[in-house]
Image (cartoon, rainbow, N blue to C red; front, side, top):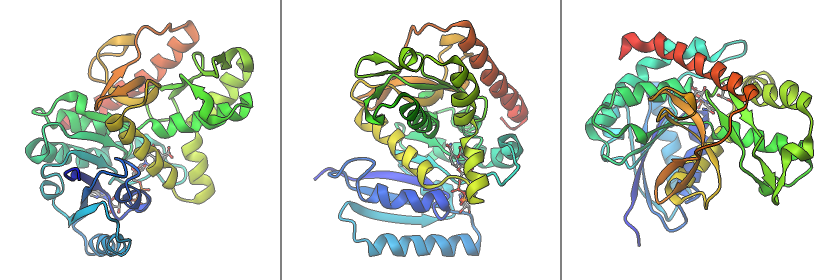
Length: 327
Ligand SMILES: NC(=O)c1ccc[n+]([C@@H]2O[C@H](COP(=O)([O-])OP(=O)(O)OC[C@H]3O[C@@H](n4cnc5c(N)ncnc54)[C@H](O)[C@@H]3O)[C@@H](O)[C@H]2O)c1
Ligand SMILES: O=C(O)C[C@H](O)C(=O)O
């Protein structure tokens, strides 16, 4: 039997938490042979703590053989103690009509405090995934607030965007989702993101050549993927939860267990490649192996792509400026 992995989840009693925790405990994230200890953080408020207690009762009632322990707390240093993986979900979500920018300052404070707590008590190898919005900039804040941890350990979730793009492309090209390779979503998890299917293939065939529709790309695919979060909020009255939890599972599973040579999108601190200034947390194509991610390098960036990539970068730089006084 493997020794248990400590998985911290913040916002554990929220919508995403409720879709996420049970799948982690059942082995869908780290494997059916990997015991986990769930370390769950919620706000120090009676209602949030009561809801967390209820979630823990339900976890108990599932009798998951892989669930080797549980901690429920309102103290980040307890939740992050020796954590191997930290899923930073807890933050205020957007409501109808709100832009991600509206959340920036409100949620930023959470990530300075949680970055500092991770810095103090988490495993030095902790893998951090920020889901709470604005996810890229929150990951940047947490990374900057944790100077003793390697910057590469901090990532933001663009996997939901990647998965959304996969579905849309599969439907347009008339190919099974599982056949699609080499898709990427560049940049910020916001409407400026750039889903890029120029390199995508299905069974070796170029999907750009197959689809051959620049108008669809510019006027349907890119905006629809970018605005999908708002469309879900409009339809549900609540932001996406099950699909977000699913993407978080995909992101961590691939990071830990490997992507078998396939491209996946992760928001990671830039190394300066592709004209993205170092340190900015930007969605890029990566291949994961042995618990590490490696950027796909040397892709050609044409003029259309450059313009899109610079636009989403400009937004990230603006967000970074907006929180500079907190760091
Ligand atoms: N990156 C993505 O693709 C993506 C997708 C969907 C949602 N999101 C974001 O994820 C976040 C959570 O969404 P949700 O629908 O679960 O929201 P929710 O309101 O249902 O749950 C959030 C939970 O976090 C808790 N919380 C708030 N501040 C906290 C703190 N400082 N420490 C611990 N817990 C805290 C709240 O009490 C609440 O239970 C939102 O910011 C949302 O916008 C991101
Ligand atoms: O769009 C939102 O605010 C929620 C989430 O980020 C999403 O993309 O569904």
